[in-house]
Image (cartoon, rainbow, N blue to C red; front, side, top):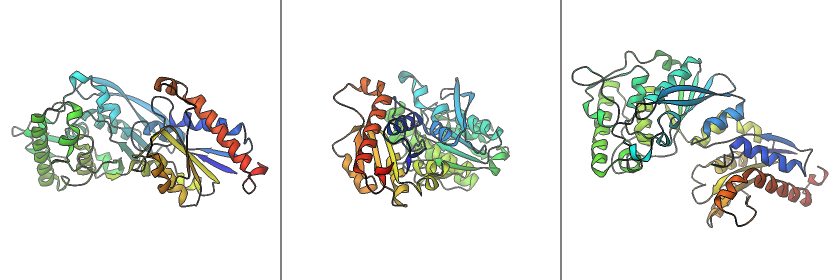
Length: 384
């Protein structure tokens, strides 16, 4: 028997690899002779770099870059096992969590550090870059990113516009003649699970500006500035990006990546599945076990367990999901390829207790699951 173990991280408790290790350890107590294949997963959000590195035998690399407010921060990216692919989480350089609550200001926050991370990855000679763009502190449309990569965003006097969403109002012309030439040799895939356009009532500023510290008045300014930015990009670069679904992701970084790096926006889970070659690993499996911290009504919208289940079902492989918490409406996952769902929490506990005991709870739940598989004795299961 072959069991593929492909969970996401259990946030604040277990990385995806730790979750997979716990599941394997528990199953082996009852099913020691089964072939186990561990594939740490993610959906493009926080933890994606770590999961891709763990799944491919890659390494985490560190670099000092410019933070959202211009300060220096220690960021990271992943060099995957093939040595030709880099994985970046923009939040590591330009994320909201890097800015204290009282200092959050999308009028000045920049994606310059994300561009610096891309440049450092290019120094490794990679041929492909995967970028997860969730959790941004910025609303600059990726202007800082392209500046870090050699692009010139100039005002009427020929000077570089200042950092942040406010600076876009001064943009007069774009000069990409000094943009890093190495970008022409790499493909850039963006993990983007939102469909927001760049501007308007569902755009970057209106929907995500408030959580980044923007007032109602600032949201209007930021939205108008992004519209101006899109106009100049269309005029000077020849790219129409304002209404592209996903352009508004990460404060408009989606638009910047489309406009300047000719990136492709893809569902995060699909990108990870491709990068870790999940199809090949599950094609001859007898069972797939996946999971994440919480399974609820949002799980069916591109979260890891559903992406894994969709892959498994192409090969008619049954799928079991383990979760820390289940909401009353979690059963909608049964219509999307998951055959059974179990909580790993043994009883009524506090959230803190559940997080601290994640590994043991996972191992115990997996051991019990293994016992059920053995007891059922379906087909030749009783021989394993």
